[in-house]
Amino acid sequence: GEDVEQSLFLSVREGDSSVINCTYTDSSSTYLYWYKQEPGAGLQLLTYIFSNMDMKQDQRLTVLLNKKDKHLSLRIADTQTGDSAIYFCAESMGSSYKLIFGSGTRLLVRP
Amino acid sequence: NAGVTQTPKFRILKIGQSMTLQCTQDMNHNYMYWYRQDPGMGLKLIYYSVGAGITDKGEVPNGYNVSRSTTEDFPLRLELAAPSQTSVYFCASTKGSTDTQYFGPGTRLTVL
Image 1: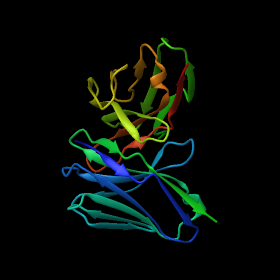
Image 2: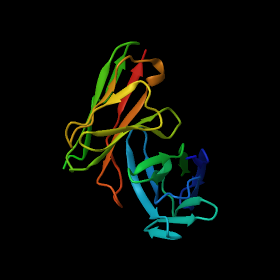
Image 3: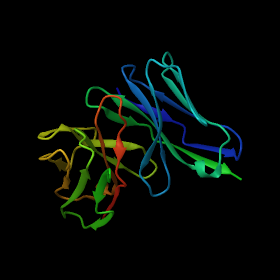
């Protein structure tokens, strides 16, 4: 079956690194995504990783993919108060490019 | 480009009423999607379309209908609104392949 799981909540101090974790079940996923949702807003794509990659870095963001364990993580370096939001991981399914979303991790950055 | 636009932004319906949520994209994307987001949850796929004239069910299609007569528009119809349909509805589109899905700003629907 298709299922994506995330921890619900993460609290970090400003300037620290944040690591948000995600597990997925479908090994045939082609792409895995991280989206950010601020209160009352839509979803903003942060980054994505192709399933044959282990790591992708984009400025303060680092995505790690462990295909054997079906585990995806998002590391945010030097976390800022503006990073406070809900972060969703999602996997892309099949030729229709449907997205299956996790339930989201709420990140709270304390000053 | 305006991207993906949705109307209305907010709506309150009574049980049993019907309405259409509008979604338009100006990026000439073939693939379009409707998701719902319940409080504290991720997004669930309602319906999707891989091109004009072609639609298919997602994870939670019951109580909804869609049509895709043009590439640009993908309206979502609620025929008999129920309180369980209280949610935020997001429309998205993509050109497929490696491209990401672009999301609209959402429609917040309350059914009382």
